Image 1 (cartoon, rainbow, N blue to C red):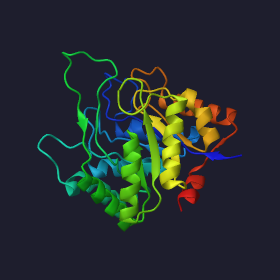
Image 2 (spheres, one colour; image 1 turned 60 degrees about the vertical axis):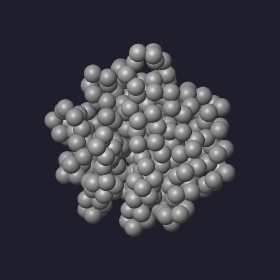
Image 3 (cartoon, rainbow, N blue to C red; image 1 turned 45 degrees about the vertical axis):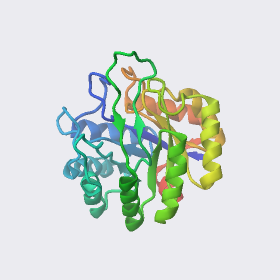
Amino acid sequence: MRKVWIEVALNGAWSRKLQPGIPDTVEAIVAEGIACARAGAAIVHTHAYDGGGRQTFDWQVYARIIEGIRAAIDVPVYPSYPGIPPGGMAPAERFAHVEALAERGLLEFAVVDPGSVNFTTAVTTAEARPADTYLNPETHVRHALAFAARRGLPPAFAIYEPGFTRAGAALARAAGVKTPLYRFMFSQSFAFGFPPRPYALAAHVALLRELDAAAPWMIAGLSVDLRPLIGETVARGGHVRVGLEDAPLGSAMGNVAWVEEAVRLVREAGGEPATAADVRTALA
């Protein structure tokens, strides 16, 4: 029976106005990370909050979260990194918290998204405020990959568009990093990439097999219900991410329920949820 990695993305950058159930304190994030790992998640992804309000990229807050989860159940936990503000940001500043976490042995992935994308909504009007652009200039991507090579960490790519796979594979080869993990990002609410359809999954997988056949991959997204794709993902050899960062906005289900659903659907498709030890062995 094939082992399928289940990752949970606990919160994202959503406010409670958009996603009311997100954990947004250190204590809540730690508690939900532990509960999700016990429910079957082998990887935990989180944005850091310290008492509600806006997210923070203070490495000390991230360290409290990672250490808090791993003290109870030893799973890989990895952070996010900030968008580039209007005034710009140097790569070293943007990834400073990641360097600090790696220095303390708290990272098992080097997160980097190999491209830029507009968060245009799937339904919009001529009068709507223009969407934000998520910028990842190649200088920043190369900086993050050089960090991954130096630390011996596999990069974790979010693939918003198929071109991200092409650029990510080329830049990863140039940097001499370990084989990356590719997360194919789907959405129903946003107009980036593909909607969650079988043809779209087939296209992503075909392109990755052409460029990096041995690389692990998983389905993920923003404001999307990926449950209909889980069976085909398992059949094609992929892995699964769920959670309130990825779920449709206003989700009535919490993180643990999303993980429990993923476990059920993986087993229905003939897979078995992987343990953290399984993930670490595969990455090694």
